[in-house]
Image (spheres, one colour):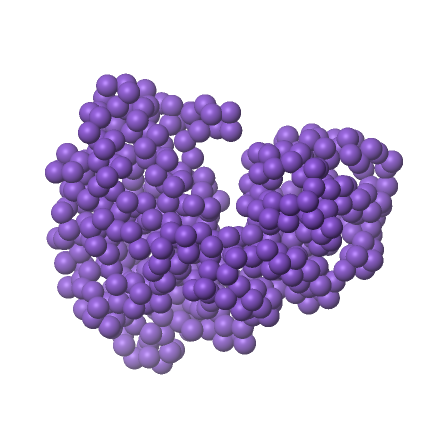
Length: 528
C-alpha cells in the first residue's frame, strides 16, 4: 500500500489496520482552498504535519470549516518534492502512547504545497495567495533562526544585507521573501492580515514583527518602497504571541517497521540539506498545547474547537515563562547535557536513572518557587506530566544529543529568568547551578568515562570551547578564570551571574564534575 490519492480508495485496507481517514470531501476542500485561500503556513516540517495540520483536520471532520491549509517551504522545494508531492500532500500521523500503542491517522487538511523561491511558478502562486482578500492567516514553524536578520554585533546577515541592497524583486533571505510578499498584499489594497509564529521562542510574535519591519524599514529608507508600507505593517497586520508544545522527533525506525508490517511500501526516510529528517509518516507524542493571543486582523479559524487556548498577551507570556523557564525546557536541557556526558542515547532511558530524575525534579522544584501561575494551565500539573508521562515515554525516540543543539542560545531563556527572579538569594540555589555546571562540563567535549565526545551544533561553540581550552579532566586549573567570561555574559544568560553568588555555586560544582573520569556520576551521587 502507498500513501496517495489512489491508495485512499481502498477503504477496507485502512479500516483493517485501524488507520483513521479524513471524514470530509477532500476534493471539494482542495477546490475551495485553491479558489479562496484563507490559511498559508510556512515551514512544512514534522511539527506542522503532526500538530497544526491535525488541528485543521479536526475542524474539517466536524464541518466547522470547509477549507484547508496551503503550506510553503521557506527556502527550496526539497521537502515538497521528497515528501509532499509523492503522497498527494497527505501525511500518515502516528501518535505514540506511553503504553507503547500507536494511534494512526491519515491527515489530508493540506491542500497544496509550494516553495518560497522568487522567480519560480511557486513564487507567482504565493503572490496570488497574498493578493486574495479571503486570506486571513500566515503561520510559521521555521525555528527561531528563520527570523534572524542581524548578527550579535548588530550587522545584517549576508543574505539580508544583499536583500536590503537589491530590494524586493528577488529576495534571498526568508525575512526578505516574507516582506516582499507582504508588499504584494499592500499593493493589492492594503488588505489586513495576521502573522502568527508557532515557533518555540520567547515573544515569538515580536520576533517575527521585528524581522519584517527591519527589512521593510531598510527598503523604505533606501527609497525602494513608500513610507505608507510601514504604516500598513504596523496598523493592518497583527503579530500575536503563542506558546506551542509538542515533541515530534525524527521518524522512528520502530514506527517505520510497524507500518511496513501493515503493508506500506513507501516509507523511506529522507534527510534535507538543512539537517531535517522526513518520511511519508510523522511520529509524535500525544501531549500537546497551543496557547495563542487572540489578536487577528482579518478573522481566524475556530481553532478553540480543536483544543487551542485563545487568551490575552499577558497570559501567553505567563504560559511561555512557565514552560520555558520552569516546567519543561530547563529539565530537558539538564537531561540533554548530563545524558551526553553519561552516554545515554534516549531521553526516555535517562528517566530510569534515579539520580538524573532526582536532579531534574530538583531543578523543577526550585523553579516552582518563583513561577507565575497563568491560570489557563496548572504549572504543577504541567511539570508532573513532563516527569511522569512525557519524558519517560519509551515510544518517543528523542535524544539528548538533539536537545543539546544550540544550548548557548537556550540557557538564558531556560535558566536566566528564574535566576533573576531569585535575586540575591540565587546563590542559595542547589540544583539550578548544578544544571548550569553540567553544561560547562559538557563543553569540554569529554564524556564521564574520559573519552572524546562529539558536541552538538551550537553557534557559540568555537568561542565557548576556546574559553575552556587547556582544561582537562583531573587538571588543576583556576576554575574562576576559565568560567568567568561565560558566567558573566549577559549575551548568554541575560545577566551577570556573579553578583548574586550563583556563579560561585556553578564554579564549585564544575570543579567536582571535572575531577577525573567518573566524576560526573560521583557528583550526582553526592549532590542529589
